[in-house]
Length: 254
Ligand code: TMP
Ligand code: ASP
Image (tube, rainbow, N blue to C red):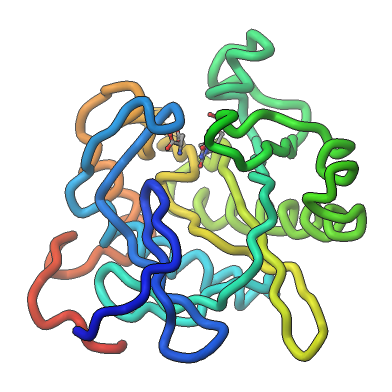
């Protein structure tokens, strides 16, 4: 394959210049980090599975009228996406207490929340993505009040849809993180869902047993990490037949 210009390398993905202007290729790595890079490891086959899982979820959301950056999956580890201007705010949606919310407010993990809660974090690795208020987002110009309204409305629609979709597969969507970007088309700007949705960015618990089937297995050294990602893909009906490996001959467009 011809060498491509790398645009950006993140902790779990690499972005390359795409084949047409305004497009990028998003490559999913097996690298896993937690606690803002303090813990590092590899989850074998994760990139292949997250590429498929994120493709599946972005496509379903697109069908529901949620605009996304996703265009199509290219191969086992890559997808073609629209180039967007990422808004430097991580949008965390919570349905059940867990993780940093449980720690911050002393809520037992798994306790019901009175309603879904949306939190904003400033996307800045040097500062460990601190929790911020809407006021900070608009005062510092990371997003305008109108953009933030649109982001909140999209995040709540996404939450309703994804909660139902996962529940139908026996998974409870505990919480997750979304990123949004500005997409420019003929002087018009739209807010679209960007980045990925996968067990890296969601907490997913089995409805019956509360078994964790997400990156918390890696963060907390619970074991069976690869199996958890495979199980999520299997429940969504998208586990690659050949298993989560880079099988030869899969670099074709689908
Ligand atoms: P938290 O409880 O650690 O704040 O995480 C909330 C959700 O956001 C959880 O599903 C994991 C996800 N998340 C990310 O995708 N990236 C991050 O950097 C962090 C801190 C959380
Ligand atoms: N994604 C963050 C990191 O790479 C934090 C996390 O997911 O726990 O460290």
